[in-house]
Image (cartoon, rainbow over all chains, first blue to last red; front, side, top):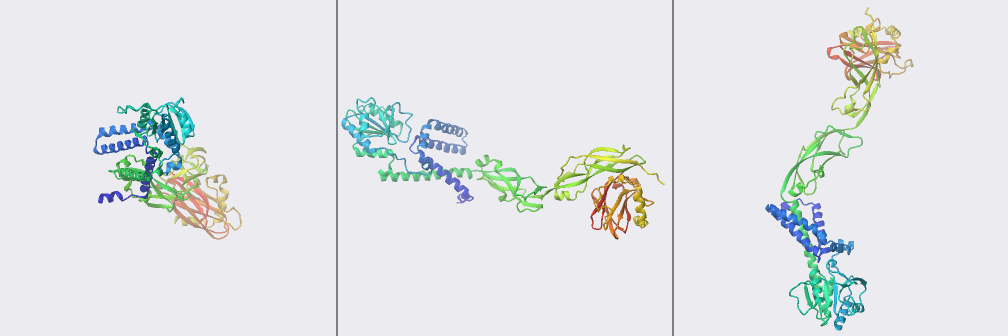
Length: 480
Length: 151
């Protein structure tokens, strides 16, 4: 009970959406690809992946490695081998069908016309081979034939299978209410227990039924008997009603039988249930698997400052975060998705203390925060300002006896500095580098640089730091 | 005490002013920043005619004015002369060493003209750049004198 509550606690709305969305996608894949070979292979891949996880859990290194390789190869092969089938499924459906329609695929094949034609041909003992495709693509298995695209009628089918017609030995493929192809060559069954009294036409019908999910109707030339080949089986058709039922089943017309409709609903409900169960299992294995701890350092981002306000003197530029989560999620964690943001919207100018809470930290789904260090940072907010300051020469040394420095003129007399308002407020003068008087004898000019601004003051010179100094030296007046 | 004596000696400010104004060449004034006070001669307004740093005052004149002084001088003075003093008024000399206010001296001026001086004793640690701000009674800067104390 405790384990269950531990697993369930902490599920957020995002997790519910995550599970629901993926369950629905899985369910839709089932709806779209049911009754196809692709679906069967997909189930195989899912089973392989499941076994691979078990092998990993049990520590079977070689087995898990091998299954992983097979799974990857199979996933690649499925796209290549079943490309036509996948294309058929996706191309023949509109967006509504792909997204939410769950009614089984029904087609408007002219069942009555086919039934009547078959029995007409049976009555005349004209051999016939009629293919009603299922979900599988026939392109890979059916050879030759002539594209027809005609609207089927009893007369047309009778004339196709008329013994003098050049294509009467081939098969007719009826798809989407049209005679799509005539004179098609079907693959022959290689079954050794094939009844000897049946001919090549029956063998061809069975061959296609073995290779695909198509329904193939055969009319015997010798006896006029009607048989249907489906799911690797040859079924004798007793009457038109049975034939009609077989055709409706093949076409997925659920209204024909309330029993099959119920079955279909149960099947869909089961598929939905298993989709949810499967996704929930994977979700739990991802998010509630073996817990791992990780420690990362992330920079602090100061966001939403007031206009012109800048951040100075931050006590810490990064914070150390201890994070936990399942091994899978921790392993694939991109540190850039973890962000530490401090909102400066309500901060005031001057020194501020910001506490780093959970709300300040953005984490990817499945990751939880264990510890933050430091738990608070201090930062000073200030507005950078410009200030124009006078330049003063910093003289050192001593003039030779009898001389005095009478006057000094500096060009430019003032320079512009930029910095924090609080730091710059007390600054009244910018000094030059120290200038020695020792060698000065006469008036003249010097080119100087300004003294470096105090380190850490975050004040910057906006103008060039080269200064010209003009000075006047005179003799001292004799002392009386 | 020394300053008081000196100021007392300058009570005949008009005489001293006249002597100083005549004896000092205007060309040397470019050592100081331009005055921000009222235009000289404007009626009813205090007008600073002349301000200079010097080694002292002798015969009512600033002695060895300049912008660099040796620490060995022992004392330096700020000499200011006003050519229009509408009424009795106080002015101030604010002494800064490296932008730090180290002394503030108040002086009285009397109409119609007046000159006054303030001085400080130098210590070994006073080497470096200095400035003196001459301010009126409201604290408005009339002129800034910049100078250095060196070896």
